[in-house]
Length: 365
Image (cartoon, rainbow, N blue to C red; front, side, top):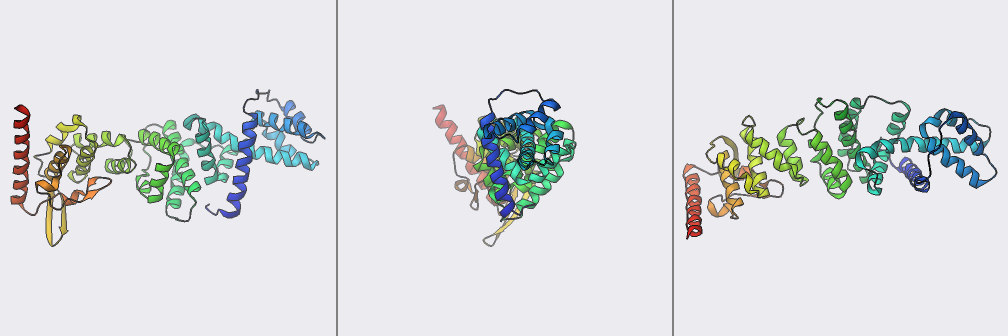
């Protein structure tokens, strides 16, 4: 499936040809797609005039899939020029049939078209087969996800193929949800944590937009923590909504809610203050860390305190979180926000209380 050298070169050449011919005919009016008209056009593919052969080719492309039977007959025509052009035209008709469907979701901008080219290149045989033998949309996502899983494990897979495979997974996932909105689809968050997948989402805006649509359509399908971490890693705005929902839902384990606290701390939205305040007294244990010869035990209230301190523009390490380790995704590694004992925890709380009291006093004067 991912054997690139000869196959990819041929398909890229073909895709480039499709792009040029599509641009040349984009403003031509549609024609009646009757069988008799298509037959006449096929005969004209063998005309002595090159201009006439090209005109007939464009007209057949406008007829599209309805010309399938006539093009199929033309592939066996004794005239070599007619047979060659019919084979080439049917390939492009199948190529463009996919684009007509995908463009309804991703738009028809040049960048969106470039994304579809990558989707096609990721598995041309799949797209061709889908045109010739349509299948229920809700059946296509699992195999696209399986292809992504395979691609994510292979560092040698070209970036263009990886981006196309990601886009195919999101696109057919969206189509599956549209066909059966209540079905739950398997999460792809574990695959999106792969470095090359994360980079592809950052580098390709249209792919990132398609990921956003996927995330919105499947927001209730996968584990909340997986969705939160994926959104944080890719700097998606929906991370805040996921974090808020996790804190509101008390059935979410404390070990997962600590990540929601840090996500809200990172986003610095004042409207989230009340949610953080509610967890400042939550003694649920969340983690244990062995570091520098000591054992740190953290509770949800510890993470809430560190998050609150950070939101106030202060460094938690100045208030007793001596082992706090910054993390680019989650702000801090939550396991490093614990204390060796209750005495240290109490000192941190007392120091923060003193700081806030002093600040309030200064503001009231």
